[in-house]
Image (cartoon, rainbow, N blue to C red; front, side, top):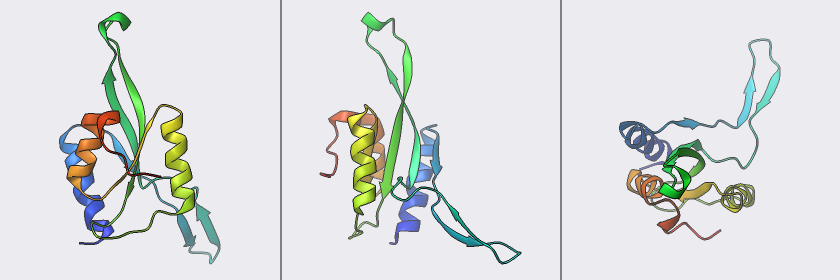
Length: 122
């Protein structure tokens, strides 16, 4: 299984859970006029979204969205770049959820267990 297939499975799983996650594209493209265009920011995770979290009763039971970044890698292997590691560390340090996932089950665990799940060491 390759990374694209893994990512499609993860997006399908999260979609079935009614969680908004979006594919973040990074790359260079050639326009029809022949110009090269760079898009995206190197290091930003493949999937970005919002995970709902209900605050405790002391906080009036309000639900807040937590920025979530999922770096998708193929099930066997897949290298996490230094830029990707730095991005995920920043997300986690600032209270979001940043993780490397290699399957739909990994992604489900991250968004349901949040900080309790085992995040890949960065």
